[in-house]
Each structure stands twice: as structure tokens, then as C-alpha cells.
Image (cartoon, rainbow, N blue to C red):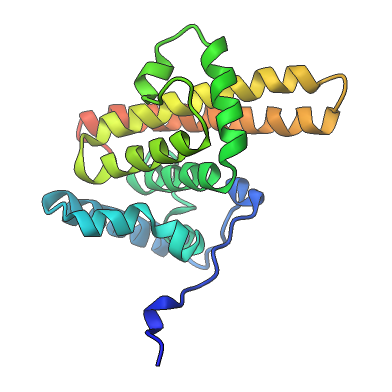
Length: 211
């Protein structure tokens, strides 16, 4: 008889998840559960960062999809602990789902940006699809077993590099492929918002004010 652990829910990866909102019957209860689960998870793992447990958390969306996490954290305000965790998992999902596009955006952004963001993000030069998958997993791992604020700052820098790349690619396609240009513009705006949210969360964490 097969081990039932070999079977799991299908991984859901539609691009719309990047903007998806999940319904809630009782917003107050959802908020309470979101904050309590985020705090409990982070406290437990950071106090005892067992490598196997961290591995499972980093690979959670690969095995289970995003819906379980969404039910907990997707409706949380951006500048909260569950809001930060939700954005990090969505960022990971975006990179895992299409690492080729992620690498294209990252390399374009890296060459266009005149800032330290590529250095802060920590990707190799040049950064291909495999390297970006490894990078985003490393950043997520840092939430559980490293400096939480540093991990958020790295994620914010990563988003800024990607947003720059998406903006410049949108400009490239503006005349020839307007729909593709619009898609890149939308992604750039969302990544810029995530960068600002994650940087704000890092600052709050350093003041012991991220809840």
C-alpha cells in the first residue's frame, strides 16, 4: 500500500494569485487568527530552528500550493507580521512559477538601477533562473533562522530590482506589444508596493513593533 504522504493537494499557481483577494466571513476573527498563527509559527521556529522544519516551511508552497497560507494571511494589512509573511510567500511563488521571466526582469533592473539594491538582494552576477530560485528560498529561510529584518530588507531590494526591470521592459514594448507592456507595468507597480511594504516591516521589526 502506498504511503499517503506521497499524495498532496495540487499546487495552484495561476498568475492572478499575485493580486488575488480571499474572502472572509468574519474579518475580526480572520485578523486574530492571522496574527496569532504568524506569531506562533515564527516564535517557535526561531527559538528552535530545526533544519528539517525550516526546509518544510521554505518548500511549503511547492508541496501544498498557496491557498492554505492565503486563508491565514492574505487579508492582513501590509505592515503586519502576517502581511509580511504573505508577501514573502507570494514573491517566492512568483519566482518559482516563472524563473525565466524573473531572471529577465532582474538582470534588466540590475543594469539600469544606480543603487545598492542588487548588492543588498545578494544575487550572483549574472543571475539566471536557477540562481533566482535559490536566492528567494534563501531570503525566505532567513526569516526563520537568520536576522528577520535583514531578510525583509533583502526581499525589498530584490523587489526594487525586479520592478526596475519590469518598468524598462514595459517601455521597450510600449509601441510594439501594448498588452505585454501593460502587464509589465502592472507587475512593476505591484513589486514597488511590495518593496515599500517589506522595507517598512523591516523598520518596524527593528523597533519591536511588527505585530
